[in-house]
Image (cartoon, rainbow, N blue to C red):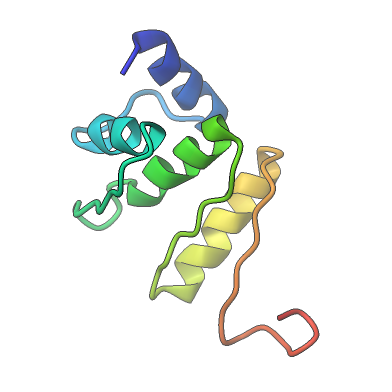
Length: 96
């Protein structure tokens, strides 16, 4: 991936640098390939898909079994001006 693009992703998402493996996942997603990222907990897998969706201008669905993580990620994205929502079992019927 182009270094300028990496810097733009870091700026948008407020990180200093990408971790090992993230750049490759993002590059594949940006090229429209099917991607499955297997990285350690807390290593930024969701960022890979969120960044690709932000740059492509589409929608990204990130599946997570952790409701607290979904809440945190949605709040963080919204603070950065990125449209985000979550769908989980704690939402009332109207919100779903």
